[in-house]
Image (tube, rainbow, N blue to C red; front, side):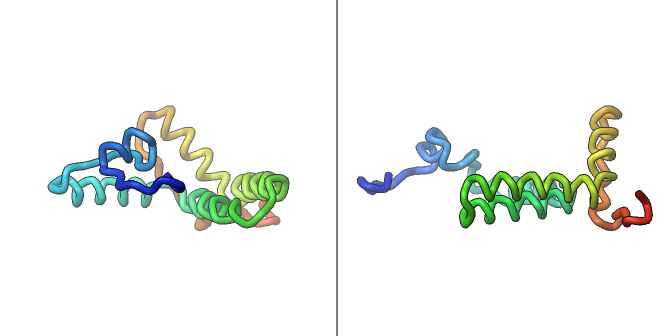
Length: 111
């Protein structure tokens, strides 16, 4: 695709994995809303760390990035462990999770 540029239509982009899925134009607003709601329902602190890791991966060596991922995992467990526990409980109880992000953040005195 880089060396021999040619137009790629939506079906081909989906087939080769360039896009996750294709929707008809009349379904675009509905699907966009569904995605926005799904993103908003994600655990906020974890989602923020995930976004940071994607961007971080472009500027660090592999070794540095793996270390940063480990830090992010530990930070998430400390700052938002309640969201991890809530996600597991919601899955087991077959209900939607109610994530709090850092609003329920523990402090050092809680340890």
